[in-house]
Length: 475
Image (tube, rainbow, N blue to C red; front, top):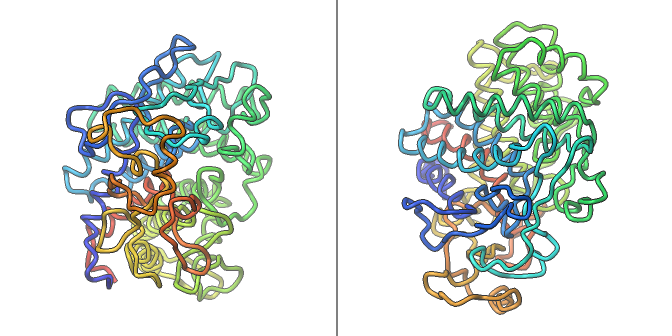
């Protein structure tokens, strides 16, 4: 499929629809993926707290607040930067998807300043079962961090999520926006006052690691949360925080990464706007790091470069390759927007790179995901003629409760997991982990590194697709 045939509007609507398949809690009457039903309705009861709602982060049935908060931040940032380009129905759908997680995050921080909830569901037990969310009989343990124990990486990311969401909904729901912002301020106080990683807490360490520990340290989340609070409030105190803590928090190192466990790349791009459009030259170091990152993505520029596969996919060691392609494409487009508004180009040594060149780099990643790759396969489920049919996802791979009302127990699902048949329920819009460094992809449910979709792959892709849907002839 060549790029001029891509229906970016269709891909955009499907990328948002995907989130309905990840919903936990009571589903609304307008639920469009009707093979899903209510689940996780007792979440939080052991702490006499309502922790229903939110998203299962991937193909399992656990609610990990750390990546869920990052997903929320990226959905909100997608709306902030590209919402005005979305058709009104899709902007509404994006805001609904955003609120589904921001409502849950508000519940997670409802007992601050004393405690914060960081996860719901025992991941060890959950990963030993293959069952629908509607049938869960594994422990729905609510993992809590009580002050003065630290949870800076989770609290910092929740701060960013609530702050970004408050900006995204400000015009449509000012009252809710204010609630989000008030809770963001409270969450940041907890994150900054009790500095440290939640994985250092022996009570929860074994159940949050190795799934979603922050292997990059918690300091980037503190800066990230403060930067979003600065954007949401205009408060000078957050400005001085990100200015004075850049060096001590290790954010001065050039990092060519952005994702749920490393915020530096996104932080530098976000803060660089203050320099590019606001002339805040005291933050010039952030802009310099953002430029260095952008230049590393431009193959023609001098210096170090990120790796690409032979087929052109941006590549990082490890699984779930497409998370890098979607997050970094998002940053390319956002940085291009900032430069365009100030009639600037990116300077990579002697090479001057216009904003449209950054957009072309992003478009190559988008088109690769949508089918322009050596496999000739769309990595978005339900988009195009050929896409993964055996994704690593419990609800998708098991017969729907609509078709099979009887309970499918913990080990009863194994027969479906091991089947070579396509999944009975199509998780429309899900972007899977994607191919390896050789551009190869086997449509294999058991290979979760390649075949598992995640919310944090999709969230930045919403903004990216919104841009190209509004500019379909860009080349």
